[in-house]
Length: 256
Image (cartoon, helix red, strand yellow):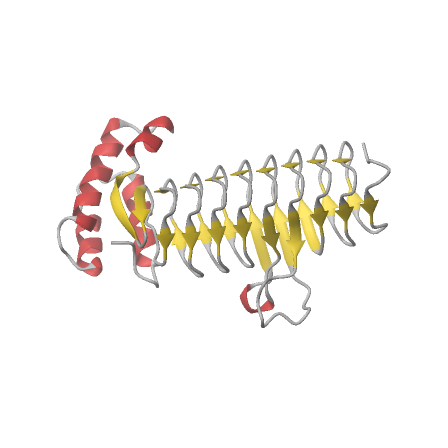
């Protein structure tokens, strides 16, 4: 399962069933879970922990030093969950001491070619990042988000669950859950209705989310007043509560 031309540091820990292709380099302190398959010419370095049944394609660079001038060699980490697909030429960097020291990728994510996930990013599960999506440092992306190709996310931005960004979107503010955004700079273009339907959201939930979207984006209210109206919705579903909780935590403003 380990190609004779792969280079594995003696301190790296590879579980049963891990395969490593030719010319790949697995550095000191790396841990890789059972069944993970690593293609040729992959570099995995630093304090990097990778879970089970991941698939990492050629020329990916995993666990490199953070691209941050403040980084001074501190021990920081990258944690990757289970069943992720990481395609060719992706780069995932470790965290920095200034922000908890960890970059994290959850489970069941589909990370396409040339994606960059910078230091201290926290990515949930079941996301899709299309080719060349780029995340600056300290970005949070919640579950079930889809980033279109060449999406750019400014540092410290947060993207809420089930959001969708169109290709070439440039995002410098937070993206609330459940909505679609597009453009440079990104603007909202309605509810992510198709994605929500595919994930089994009920017609009643979709109707309430559409009402919430109208309050947030078509009422002309300042964000604080829009939050008050959202909280006052009669019989609101749990998704409205999730939207309100996200909006209350916003520090950069939202895409509007």
